[in-house]
Image 1 (cartoon, one colour):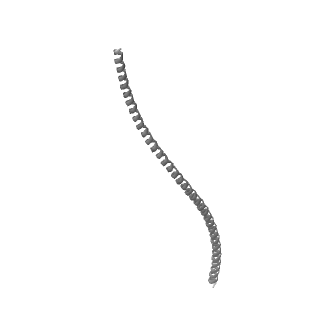
Image 2 (cartoon, one colour; image 1 turned 90 degrees about the vertical axis):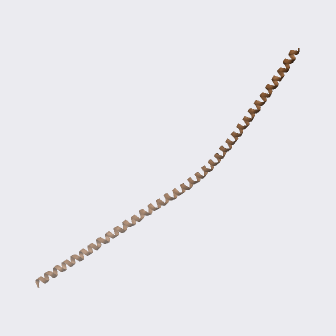
Length: 132
């Protein structure tokens, strides 16, 4: 019987210790759960800030891309106008070259005509001089 009492006391002590361990373990797990919830909340907050920052960066990048596209369009328009001007100036230069060639021919023709006329007049004066 004594053995039974001893076993019973041991069982009660062990049960009390197990309840105490269980309560401590439960308390510990509740504390850990609360810490985890706090950390999760902080993580959500940090992620929220990062997400807002990334959204802002994305908006800024999109705005800059739109501005750049607009500038490219403007520069392409200016380039087209300048190309057109260059083409027009090249055509004018070619026309001017052709006019100069024509003028040079006219001058050469007039020079030849004047030369011929001068030779004719000189010959006429020589004939008159011989007659005198």
